[in-house]
Image (tube, rainbow, N blue to C red; front, side, top):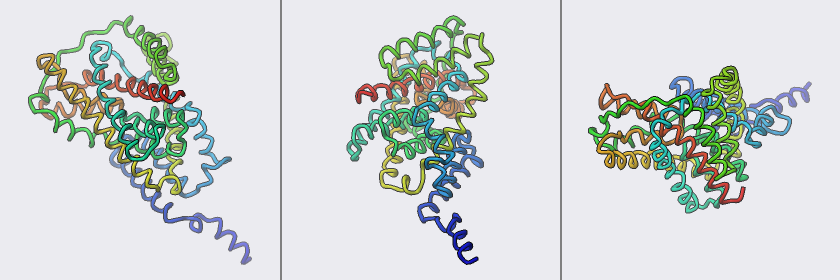
Length: 371
């Protein structure tokens, strides 16, 4: 009887719990609070934080034979990030970008944070591949961050990178407004933009096809991301496969989010996460995201000057690819200056351009390292 009780005690989670596990469980509970109570990007933050909780209560769940190990293999094979892009494409209206192609410039400007963080990461001691994987956090695009980390062989950094990327995506309404207000005047924030032109169905159908051909010819390694993004949008705009569009944007999207979120969270065991490297990644991610936001706003100010005051610089902050959260923040800050100002559709142009721009940035890094 004594041996039986002894063995039972050794099998309980209490016996195997470490100080690091307790810290990570507290972090997971904090993220669950943000997801449920504050509703900060709950669609992703909730499964990520619960995966974090599970792996620190029962580490074998991520070992070979454990449930989340097989979920994570889909991340390693870059299947789940690509399927997320399929859903994003099916959900997103590319019309504002087509109606105002200059939005591409704002999406490109926001990638300054990515390449600036790349240089800074190398100064902080990361090698080139590690620096590239970390710096993509500046695009505020979780799937692309996971995709690039795996392609560059940075499996050990994937957990901190993904958690940082998704955390900053969820904190867009908190991080961006102070930067936007600091870099613009009240008069600039009050600028009302002209209504966008109507975009024909032909343009909407041709756009994803042309973008796929052009981008994939220049950077073939972006095909899984750009291809799935544009396929999803073609489902949406063609109007002939409504069932596929609905599946990609609803059922499939939510299934993938469950697998992706829990498996990403499960990479944050105490042994893997509680390191000085993780702290550096979190700091670099914040710098990259802040720089990207600032670069988009500053380029928006330049376009405002060149256009004679017709472009509101606030839409430049949406050049990061946190769709559609960043565009909503542009609308919110603009409405605070003038309640009659409606910037949402104008901001969606740079927002969509940012999704494409971050994928292109990832493709550039893969080309540099011969992936």
